Image (tube, rainbow, N blue to C red; front, side, top):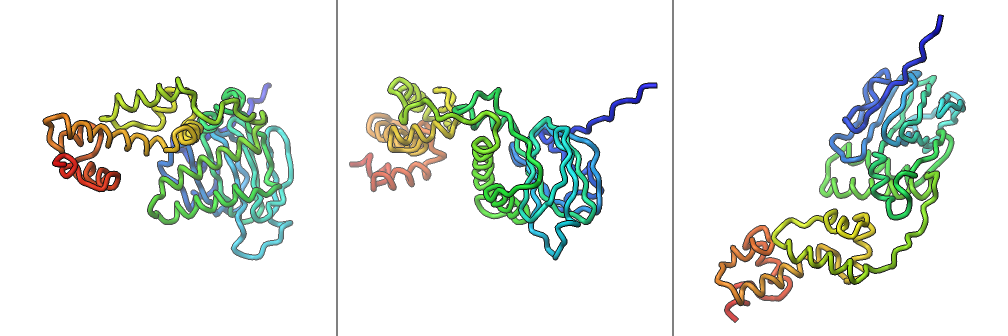
Length: 305
């Protein structure tokens, strides 16, 4: 009689699924609604997980313990990609479990640990200028090594989960990008190559971008739209654009809007409120603030002069 193969449990972070179903207790801290990134912190009794795999890359981190603990007691076993290893799990040790790689682990004592998961599609998006996106694959690592940068990112993400502060989403976006670049540099099987692009946008590509901006000033122009025109990642495009123009895309768009507003103030019968809408400002007061900051006079004063 044939015995059936054990079922490998699937963890889908893309559907906001958490790892609670694998463990005795739910996580004590969780992120919610972060795009391409997920955070959990756990306090668990003794456990042994079933074999499982996730669709995102996972970093498991052993935080500094809140009480004295013999390292021999704290150690445990992990089966990762078909290999078994005993882990010391010292303060700050991390494990890296790439997407699609099966694992299971056990703890023989009360355990504290953190997991951070990142969407492979985001790594492909960030790394497309350095690596063929189809070849972005991470190397599995047991929880036997330290990584100060990942530890710092995990700590910063935990602070964001514990208490909402101003600029939180912007900080999360920055940490996610930093984590992605760090993983590509240090844990990717295919080593990134320096980009073959020049340090500036070519004249044809720059014209494509600036033409698009000037034709769409009325719209909310996004960085992803501009980078797609020249087929670069947003982050690499931002760097090249700034080196070429000595302005960020945001600063250039604002400059174009003010120039267009100056022309319309002198050559059209539209009201200042109508002109503000035509060149992409939120309202007349938004135009007035930006106009005065740039030129030292209000739109009405400019018009009257």
